[in-house]
Image 1: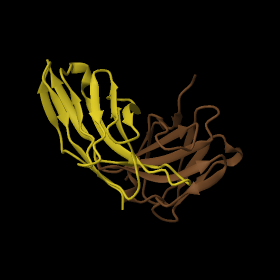
Image 2: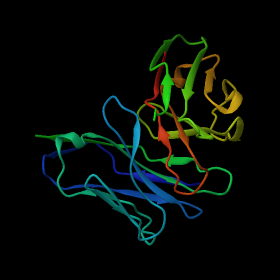
Image 3: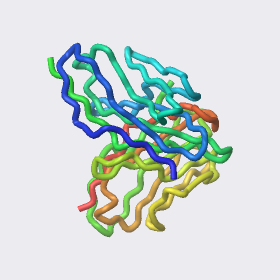
Image 4: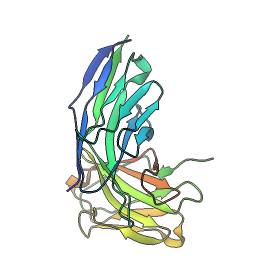
Length: 114
Length: 115
């Protein structure tokens, strides 16, 4: 079945460090890919998405490129801030005409220290 | 525009009791989804409503879980009787369209603890 694998956390970085959170997927169809973020005490919110191969999603300095050849959607940011501390979830959906449920990875906790 | 709201934010019950969670989607969103995250693991899909109809309930764990969406507005998820393994965070989400790449808007979640 369809699945998402993302790197285990927690990831601890100093402010202004470079961030990469790896995400790979398995899908029978042609998925759309998402990164959702959950800040402390809040619900999930969409960070960025990509709907076809080679698309790059970007938002708030974060980027991820849909790589079909490596079935990956790694999240990157060039310079993290303390305010980026959160749990990051990689997800996919395969729309087959009936449902577009999201399939999530386990989440990666990011802690950014000043 | 109000976001997705969930009630209660926390619930602590004893094994064998009944709990009902409520979700109010964004107004006008026909699609409503329930997910849950157990023990810090991945967030798992439970079911999907389109208006008042259950479009996909393949993720419902067993018949102790009953979801309804009467009138196609808010939804409830009842757990009866609750078991220890039902503890976790239950998320509700809604979306305007049923399409590939469509964003789902999430509520803050209900943290359920079964003792």
